[in-house]
Length: 311
Image (spheres, one colour):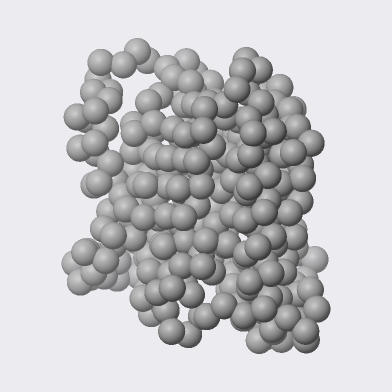
C-alpha cells in the first residue's frame, strides 16, 4: 500500500470528505437498487442494462475530451478482459446472490475486495508483496468473512426468515475475488485516462453480456417490470455506475488513491442503512461482528494504524 507517500501528497479537506461520503452512499445504494430490480429483472439482463446504459453515459461524457476510440482500437483485448473481471463476472455473481440475501449482507461480503486484492497482488506481482500490516489486515478481513459465512450467519438478512443457501453467500465473495484480479490487472491502464478506462471496460462488458442475456434470459419474453424496478435499473446504471465513476476519478485526483480507497469502509453502512429503512432488512450480531472485523482489516491494510510498526 502507499499510505505514507499518498498521505503526504494529498490532504483530505472537508469538501473532499463530503465527496467521499457521497460516493460511499452512491455505491452502497447500488446494492439497494439491485435488490429491488433483481426481483423482476433476471441477473444477466440486469447486468447488461447496468453496463450498457452506463457505457452510453460515459461515452457522452468523454466525447471530445479524450481520444477514446483510438484507445479502444489499440487495446480492445485488454478492455475485454478488464470488462469481464471488473464488471461482467462480479456484477452477475452479486446480483445472483442478491436473489437470496439483502443489500447489507451483500455489501459486507463485497467489502472483502481489498483483502483479496492484496493476496492476489502478492501472488502475481513482484512489487506488492505481503508485509506485517498486510498480513494482519488480511487475517482480520478473512476472520470477518468466516464469521459471516459460518453457520450462525445463515439466518441473516432474508425477507422470509429462512436460511440462506451457501451459494448465495459465496457468490458475493467470488465477485470480490474477481474485483481483486481486476485491480491487479488494471495497473496496465495507468497511462490511459481514467474516464477512458471506465468507458472502455463498460463497453467491453456490454459486448460480453449482450449474447448471454439474449440466449439465457430471452428478455423479449419477460413481463414488463413495475415502475419501481425500472427506476431502480436506471439509478443503478446512471447514478451508481456512470456518475459514481466520474465522482471516483474526481476524488482520486484531489485526494489520491489511498485516501479514495477509504470509500470501501463507507459502502456497507450505506447499504445496510438503506436496506433497513426501505426494505425492512435486519442484521444479526454475527453480521455486525463480521463487518467490524472486515472494517478493522481494511484500516490495518491502509497502513494508518501504527504505520511505524506495521509497514
